[in-house]
Image (cartoon, rainbow, N blue to C red; front, side):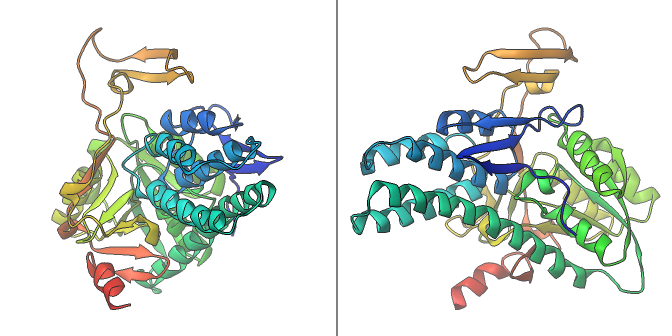
Length: 360
């Protein structure tokens, strides 16, 4: 069953992005018209989720290239790609897309391609990225079914952050698995960590579950230990932003603690992501760069900026004025806490995917 939500729309040469800062109060699309506005949308989390960031970034490059009146130099393209890469450095999907896009462009330029042909080829690349991600997500959902017993049709699942249609091209990774389980006849109850400080769980995951009519309870990030002790939890399923060769996984802050509690409680801890999430250039999670965000996201419940970086909405102050706060956007879960990694290519033990890649 297809998702009801379309987070990224490519219409008339412009990228329409569902503004996730405004959910659940309203469903409103931000219209990006060039790379600069796309970088703003990514940096300020109008669009978020590693796959969605990469797709939006691809369309941002397309819009910039479509404005050109002559073929760009390699130096100019490198400058544009560098500004895009800097928007959200932790998620590997963006880096992978940029490398693939650069490789394609090098091939096209080597053929002495005309500007209109070049612009069309770039557009087809971005559209292909969007379609490929949706197909991969649907396969992830199907591959995950083997992990759940056929004789038990009621499942209680904890998830963290938002990993559904809003974070991808439309189906989702961890929430995509939940959708696939529902479609396979399981009765699902989801417990969604609120995911401080940006509240992706309470704002976005709960919103998606309501849209899909899947039962969902919001829990604070500190409730998971109580929940796994007090209720029968069948699995924890989370997404990922980057997976090192050994299986160490970077994901939204709070994931590591959730994994440790799941291990102590003998609850399976599953990571869902496409094969684009693997970064085999990194041996362990210690090499993954962790993005530090504005402390005001912690001290204020609503903190938004305009494209110039100026605050446009600051409300719900929940800390003393001038209080200091830390705001790492991600943490790294060691492979030893991860039960399985679920991709479109299959279900893996942490680190097994690297060995498989080496054999092919």
